[in-house]
Length: 369
Image (cartoon, rainbow, N blue to C red):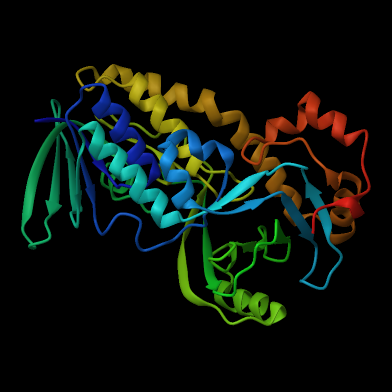
């Protein structure tokens, strides 16, 4: 009998496994493939990510530093509205390497991380959870635990097996890469995809990432082709996946809980979820006692207290993507320039540091290029 079965070894699953194992819990993690693959997420993250990895991993993971973004209402040739800081705003990292580093941290803390193990069923009982797992040899084994953590992404098998509510929305995201080196220090954001946006991220020697997300009813692949055609580039390593937006009203049962994309703990205005998911993982590790199912209520309230306001404010920002173009242009023109915000925290828009920047604007033409 394990204390926790963790399904999925992405950042939230590995972070929770590391924290729980370090606290003396018996933790086994099942990852259906190799950790970090296939890639289905951008590697554009805030500086906060370095708090979750060993100091010596930074040099291996970092690909580029980013100082801000140029927003466009149209394509690459349209007017750019720069938002920037004099110091780096964010990092571009090796996304596969991040997952593997976090999984290694979980192993070092004592968690049993098993790759090539696919969870095919979850049976919640009064005193335990029984997880059916297909091994690399093709056999199906039953593994019992006091609780199960569903960290298995936007189409979570744990969530669906236990009839937990679905996220409010699933977007369809795609991205691909151009290998030509680019050490530019601004990302480009195009408000051209319905209800969302497209992007171009310079990754230093690792090349350039192009991507976009939109409702699955739209032809996302065709929109992506139009984006890369407008930039006159040929890309490879095409990736595609679902992006959950809007957490459901409940992410726990009697002996199960969801973390990360499985719980739609993502930024509604970008779809990113690395920091929010690992924040929720820390809340779970601190709040949940596998011998006391009542502690799941502490996790349910705790993660919402930690990131709920940011998610609500992020949803308000997202609605601005669908405003009429003249309104978007006016808003971007009024707000562009030097900023004092944190890329993962919309509430920082109201911080004294940002408000000082807002009311003492430098010339946007001084933005880094």
